[in-house]
Image 1 (cartoon, rainbow, N blue to C red):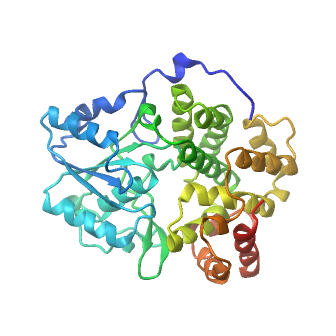
Image 2 (cartoon, rainbow, N blue to C red; image 1 turned 180 degrees about the horizontal axis):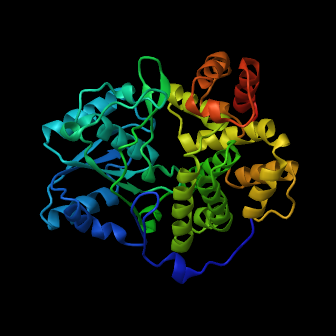
Length: 396
C-alpha cells in the first residue's frame, strides 16, 4: 500500500448520508446522540455493548450526555466477543425489566450483533433462531414492532452498523447462524472517528483487515449488484490509503475517519454475500471464541489461493482500487500476505489456540454457514478439510 495524502478538510467534515440508512458521519457526532433520541421519540434506551468495552470512556461519556439532557438509560454489557444465544436472552430480559423503548448498540462488531439480536426478540415471543436468514421472516405487526435502533461503531472493521444481520452462536450446537429481519433497520448510524482513536494498534489492524476481507469477499461473490460492487471497490480504495496510517499513526484522525467509512462500505458490499473465509471463521469463532477480525485475517490467504485463479478480471479491478502496480492473481495474493506480515498477523490458527483435531468438524459446520453458499468457487467436503487444515497449520 502506497502513501497517499488525504483531503483533510473533506474527510473531517461532518456529513449526513441517507444510504442505506440515515448516517451521521464526522468527528464529535456522538455529542448529538440526545438530539437523535428526541427526534426519534426515544426516552429510555438500553445501551448494549460488549464485556470488554463496558469500562471504556465512550460508555461513560454516552451515559453522561444522555443524563445531562434528561434521557434515562440502562446498560447491558453481557455480550462476549462471539455473541451467544443465552446472552441475547439475558439482554431481552434486561430490556423488558427496564421498560426500555430502544437500543443503542455501541462498540465493536459483537456489540452491534448483540444489540440487533436483542431488537429482533425484545418485543415478541419468537425464538431467536426463527429469525435465521434461511427461514421465512416471522410476521411483525403493529403490536410487536421492533424497538428503535441506533448503532455507534467504535472499531473500523465489521461494518455491521447499517444493516440488520447478526451472527449469533447457538450454544446447543456451538455453531454460528445469521439472523435478521427485513423490517429491522437502524434508525441512525453514528460514525464518529474520535471514538476509534484509542483502539490499540493490534485491534486496529485486525478490524481493518476484517473490513478489507468484507470488501474482497463481497466483491467476488457472483451476480450483478453494482451498488454492492461499487461500495466494495471504494472501500478497498480507502483502505489502501488509510489502514497502514491508522495502525502506525494511531492519532491520525483523517485515517481513522477514512477507515470508519471503508468499514461501513464493506458492510454494504457483503449484502451480496460472503465466502469461505467467513464460513470457516464463523465456526472457528463459535467453538474457540477467537477474535473475528483476526480469524478472518489468518484464513484469508488460504482462501484467496483457492478462489482467485479464475477471477482475473475481478482481481484486476481490486488491484486497481488497492493501488497495486501489478494486477495479476499471484501479485494480489503476495501483496495481501505482505500486509499481514507488516501487521504481525499469525501465520496459522494454531497460533491462537485452534487445534488440528477440529478439522473434520469445522469443515462440516462451515458448509452449513450462509457464506458457504455464496462463495464464487464450489467446494466439497474434501476441499473444505484441506482449506481448514491449511488455515490452522500454515495459511501463508
